[in-house]
Image (cartoon, rainbow, N blue to C red):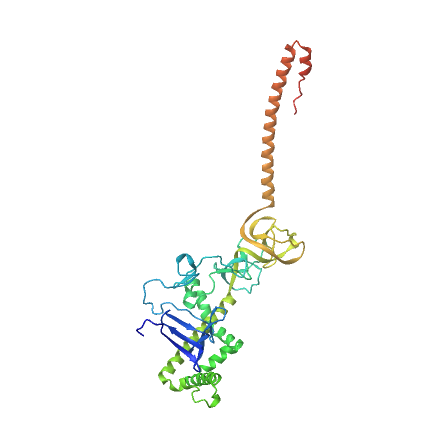
Length: 413
């Protein structure tokens, strides 16, 4: 250091200067990485990769990659993650996520579906495309429709919404805040059964829990994992004295700390997975706008594209609306007979019915007819006046040839 020349620190493989791995180049104030950087945090490993095509990638043996801002809450200013194009100019910001979870995107957000949905609590086992109504037992929940022209009709169960309002929450506290004590207590009651089901279904969760039965078993697992990694990267094989060195050199206090953190991470993971399963069981996305498949029955009238759809006598099934009622949307496809599933444009609204529409059309026709009759009377009066004037001029004219040209016209009635 201290000179004008370019200075750096590089790490090489077997004294081969052409096989550099990574290093700090002071002149450019740049950290250079030729392949990947492994970050060891027992018992898992994370890597930073630089690919040959210039792409950058993060990978981990854990179940997630986390980005944390201001973990100590020591700053009063807003912290955020930002993605830029070219440079950090404000007009080059593509996406921004602040510490409160507010996400801003410059361009168009494209989800996997074609509708906007909202989460509702339900006690029914609902299927995609079924109609739902307000649950009479609780106003913030829905149940399957059960009557024709049901006035409490809410919407249709979405299958793959692009956006879900009131979707999954991050914990029991948020669940209680958004949905109240009743839902939060229901989750607390179900949580142990949900965790048991998850352990029964997933080998990785059972293996992780088994490693955390005691600090000793956890230490044995970490040692075996590090030994396997060391044998993989060195030529010493099973006799390599460095295998598992980091565990043997680790103080009991630090290992216990790692164990406690691993326990906390596992509990947090299980609580999150149980909450996700709880949402899958008890919440359903109801389409508010967009295109969705809907179950229909044409036995109550053939359905054409453009027909309004409402609840039928069949539970959860829609039909063509033929009278004034609440409708859930407009059919985008036809169904001549029987039951089936068609595409529908969601538009919950009030449909006045065909009789009302006919009455309105008749009133319009009567009004137009009266207007035409008044206009005809006015024109008849004008024609009569003109005819009288022509007759008067004809009688007073002495020129036969002119009189012959002036022929009165009979007024049209």
